[in-house]
Length: 343
Ligand SMILES: Nc1nc2c(c(=O)[nH]1)N[C@@H](CN(C=O)c1ccc(C(=O)N[C@@H](CCC(=O)O)C(=O)O)cc1)CN2
Image 1: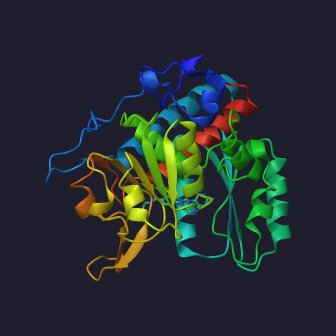
Image 2 (image 1 turned 135 degrees about the horizontal axis):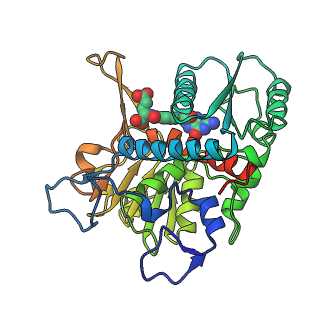
C-alpha cells in the first residue's frame, strides 16, 4: 500500500498500489521523481504586482518521456518486447496531422513501435472499426488511438467504444470514462490531457485534497474527466460552462482553476483568487502578422493579468499541451507492462 500522491502528509486514506498506478501513472514512484528546479515551493498568495511561478510543461514532459524511455529499455532487456501504439487518422485536418506526426516522433524517441492508418475524410464508420478490430487482435499493439475530432458523419461514441478497453490508451472508451465517474472504481486508463494537468499539479507540489477547484468547460476530452479526477483526488469541484450565470464569481472561489473551454483570454485577472493555481488547457490561434505562421497561440487565460494574481500558472504554448503526448506514451507503456505482466 502507498499513499495517494495527491494527498497531504496528514492523509490517513490509503489506496492499493496497483490501483494507484492505474489512475495516477507514476514512472518511477514519487519518491524518485525529481521536482523541477523551478518548482513551486509554496502556494501562498503573491504580493500585488508579483509574478506567478511558471508551471513548465515542456520541462515536465521531457522528464516523463525520459522516465518512460528508461522503463521501456528495462522492459525490452527483460522481456524482449517493446510497447506498440496504433494511431488512426481520418480526414486531412492540418492540426490533427501535426499531432499525429508528433505522436509518431515521440514514440520513436522513447522506443515505442508505432503503427499508423490514414483514412480519407469520406471513409465509413465500418472501415474505421475494421482497422480498430485488426489492432485489437494484434498482440504487438498495446495502445489504440483514434485522433479526434472525427468527420461529422461519424458517431464518435460508436468508434471509441470499438477499441478494446485494455488498449484504450486515450481513456475515452465509455467503460473507462464510466469507471472514472464511479466511487471506488478506477479506469484502466485516464485521458491524456487531464492526466497531464494532474501530473503538473503533482510534480509542482500543489495540494488538492480539501481544496476548491473550478473546471471551466465540460468537454468529454478534458473538462469532464478533469473534474472527475480532481474530485477523486478529494477536491471540492465546480464546473463552469456556457450556461453558468456567474462564471467569474464561481471561479474566484477556486484554489485551483483548470480552464479548457477554447475561448481566447476568457479568464481575466478579476476571476482569480489571489494565490490560486491556474492550469490553462486552451490552445487558441489568434491572428498575428508578425508570426511566421500568421497566427500565434494563446490560452483561455489572460496571462498578462492572471500571472499577477495567481501563485502558479501554465503558459500557452509550453504548458499542458506537451503533457498530452507525454501521458500518451506513459499510458502505452502501462498497457504493455500489463500485457507482459512486467512490474
Ligand atoms: N484522440 C485524441 N484526439 C485529440 C487529443 C487527444 O488527447 N486524443 N487531444 C487534442 C490534440 N492533441 C493530441 O492529440 C494535442 C494538442 C496539443 C499539443 C501540444 O503540444 N500543443 C503545444 C502547441 C503546439 C503548436 O505550437 O501548435 C502547446 O500547447 O505547447 C499536443 C497534442 C485533440 N485531439
